[in-house]
Amino acid sequence: MTAREPKARRRVLLDARPLQGADARRGIGSYVRGLITGLIDEGYDHRVALLFDASLPAPPVPQSRFIAYTVRRRYRDRAGLIEEAVTMGRQLARIRPALYHATTLALPGRCPVPLVVTVHDLVPWALGGLGLLGERTRWWLGRRLVRRADLVIAPSEATARDVRRLAGVIEDRLLVVPEGLAPGFTPAEGAWERVRERHGISRPYLLFVGALDRRKDPRALQRAWQVARQEGAEVELVLAGAASRQAPSDMGEARRLGYLDHAALVDLYSAAACLIFPSRYEGFGLPVLEAMGCGCPVVTYRNSSLPEVAGEAAVLVPDGDAVALGRAAAEVVLRPEVAARLRQAGLARARTFTWRRAARATIQAYERLRTDGD
Image 1 (tube, rainbow, N blue to C red):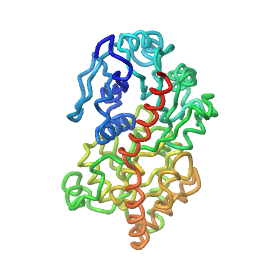
Image 2 (cartoon, rainbow, N blue to C red):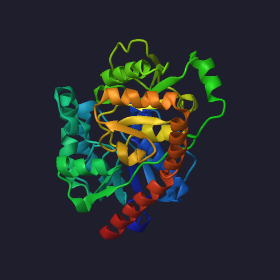
Image 3 (spheres, rainbow, N blue to C red):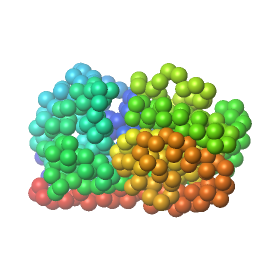
């Protein structure tokens, strides 16, 4: 692509830097991977360029017709976000894409091309409290700049409401595009045997997947497990996922497996008695979707986006009620007919969330902005 190339041939620039570093293991990395897969499936990869950080190793990307650009940042964390706001406009003027799709709140202060931003959640402001003061301080600039975007994509109606209320984005610039289920999150035959051999787990278990930060309410998780056992469910509690800095050091007798590769995680979902998910806020709630895709019953709180993702395919209890959460989990364990119903409903529900569908809606937004900008 040259500086004189006409706009009709210029590509959308997608910020793929969440595929590098620690973000690659988080939900934001899953979002970027999924969207890239969907763009390829839709045959749109020849219209997209990927943006990477030159100071980090290049991540694996499926074979496709994407091209890549790089930028280099001198700073990280809060200073890096300020640097992004100051310098990214010049980088975009150099690259000259048809539009720029920012996949985090690291945003340019001035954008010389149409700007699309995906806002995954506004947890620091939606929940508030001193515990999230650091995150509010870190992302304050992105929250202010997002209202300048030509279009803001939210993964759920709940997040869209927060973007309107907390970031001042007007309705006409908001688009809800639910995330999809990544390939491979399907029931795995022989999962129980592999879980027993790999992790030494020999009894039925409740599963939690995530970073176990304050938002995931780890104390409520322990209380719900205690209640489930008091109700007669003889189960272990298994924790999967890279621990955050906010994760408690002591989770009692729960098994902490840490970060798992895709195949091991699918096995863990497939063999679990149920996913128990006491999150107080989710922009989308990817573990719920992944569990349903693997035929794992789900018990979670009724808050934020969780009812949108789960529908009628999970047990939703009042927000913050750990006792109700534990009793619901016990019922799933002790009543096979309840577990079977949830498994079948979850499998059917999960099939409705695809990255190809998400990519199609995103492409339509791209094309509208490209046309509007001509």
